[in-house]
Length: 300
DNA sequence: TACACGTGGCC
DNA sequence: TGGCCAAGTGT
Picture 1 (tube, rainbow, N blue to C red):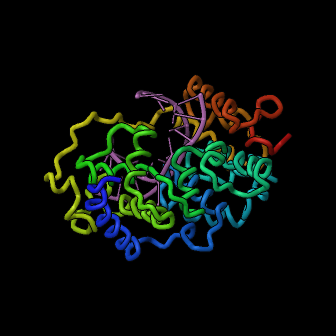
Picture 2: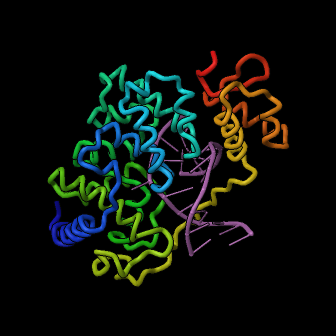
Picture 3: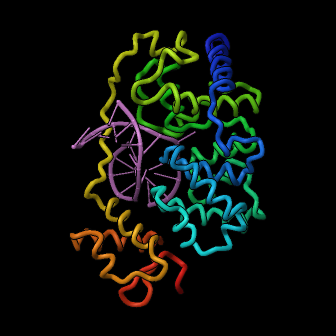
């Protein structure tokens, strides 16, 4: 490890850790009593979804399925329905598949090995390391959009993170972690929290930042981002919106839904049909009998 | 690498 | 008002 890292990064880590100890939100999946399964469920729910919306869903989900075995024992459609309006319902599908795999391959336990975690459905580069660090206290780089932004600013002096590259991003964050595993894990969650509460994408709260005097971006005068402009997401009128409307209709029904009911959720037949076909192909919807549809595994 | 994939709140 | 953004994954 270079001498430069020791003199510049270590004080920054200390300040971030002190700030976290004082300012972190109290969240159920951060309680010392949280199980690895609880941590895993929270991480999947938090993928692209704000904490405020996850909180009630997390409580309801874990009350119903406190273990992987409990979730694995029900039809996947139950998981999709319970997912409610969290968004990206394929996550519910994969979380159910994850529970099945945990029972089949790991005795119903959540493994502590990053590669074993990566092999599970719905668990990618971020979530595998988040579980290893937050549930098992390991020293592994945990890189999400918050961490990428904090490192881009505080360390690299850029207003925004560049294009994501798992290999590059993991290496950059690994170099910042202290040697001690529990401290490294705490720094990982602290970096995420700093990005979520202070070093935000829009209107960062620099006066409240624990590293405001050392931040490379501030020291450079907070220059505007020069890199390529990201393409907007877009939602209105897309297949994604139509899929959401179809799923809502199916979630709200307790029996198979006739075609004409689904036809009523969107006026354009071509797009509606394409969206429904996509949902069936994804395993989110079961065609049952002729012209009736249902959540998967519940009627047949 | 780029794109598809839900939903709702905020400035 | 509407674009932007939120603890990503899979293809």
